[in-house]
Length: 227
Image 1: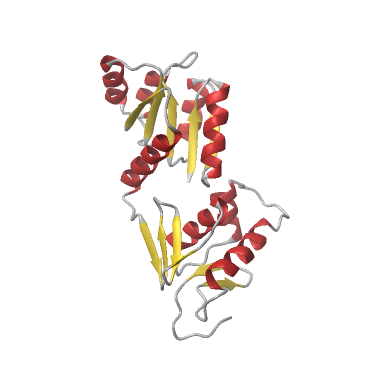
Image 2: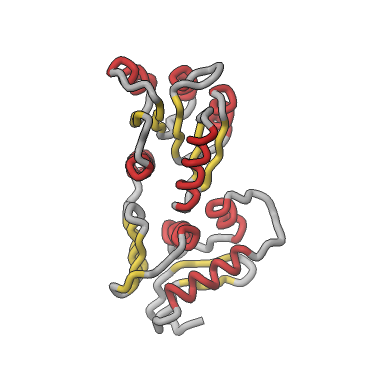
C-alpha cells in the first residue's frame, strides 16, 4: 500500500518512514500543505498521515480542500489535543485523529483500519491451503506459518488480491517497490524465487506459477502437476 506523509518535523518523518517501510508500505512525504495537497490530488494513495500544524496551508485547510475532490482516508497526527481541535479536524473530513506523542503500533493499527474501511476489502485471502491475514501480516500454508520478510509478504498480498490473474513485472515493481518506470533490475525475479521457495518448496501442489513473457499467477490448480 502507498502512504503519503504530510509532516514538517524531520524526526517524525524519519520515524514514520522507517516504520512503515519496514512493514512493507511505500511512502512519499512532503513538509507543507501546498505540496501535500498537490500530491494528494494528483496521485493515488491508500491513506494520508496529515499533521495539523503545517507551514503555509495548515492541515485542516489542506484537508478541507482535498475533500472537494478526493475521499482518500486521512489520519490527523498533531500536538493539538483539545476537544475543539479534534472536532475541527474530524469536521474537515479526517477519518481518525491521533495526538502526539503517539505509539507507532497504534498508528499502524489505525492505518490498517481506515484503509480497510475505505476499500471495503476482505482482511484475509485464501488460495488453496495458503492463508493470508492482511491485518496480522501473517501467512500460513497447511497450518504451517511462513517466515516472510515485509517485502515478501507485500508481494504475496499483491498476488493474492489478484489470484488467478496474471500480474506483470511492471505492476509488481510499482505496487511493491514503488518503481513506476522500466528498469533492468532483476529484483522481481529474485523476490519471486525466494517467495516460491517458502510457499511451494515443501509442497507437492504448487501455487505460484510463471507465465513466460507475461508475469506471475498465484492460483490453486488441483488437476495440474508442478511446473
